[in-house]
Length: 198
Image 1 (spheres, rainbow, N blue to C red):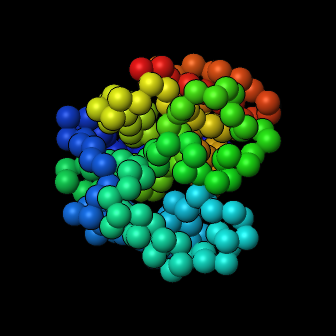
Image 2 (cartoon, rainbow, N blue to C red; image 1 turned 120 degrees about the horizontal axis):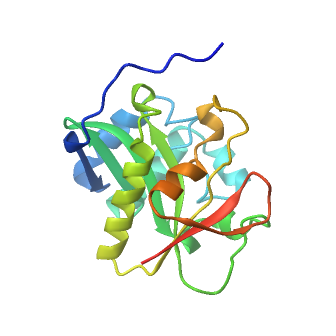
């Protein structure tokens, strides 16, 4: 039995995107909710060694991400619909992501400096409406303003139409393709590395 698709219709003219900064912390907090998006992550999974991440899961991760925001570090883009925060896309220089740098499957393609799109979180009622592709486009625009030359991503290739959201937090390959990304290399059947050259 197929899942029923939501009747919600998105007017893309009412979508707006802003980098997360101190003035938008409350919106980020509201979007992520009590669970910190997923299992107390607070978008720190890639930034810490697994043992550190698990040790400070929940409140510790929330404090860590707030510290980055308070230090004016670029960590991602918030999506708003009718002034409500509905989506998140993490983006930063690749070397900020400890676990990414230590990954065998996602090891560096070359020595060129890249910014990495590492994570998405979309409010449940806005999923399956193309928000992630719109977020990717907003990230491209933001990276252009920062003179970034290469953006890299590590999406999942879905094994079914109804892949659980918990397995799609790095994004879906088709969403990146719609935004103009191309597959650069694939060392795993379900995890291509994609790039966008600015």
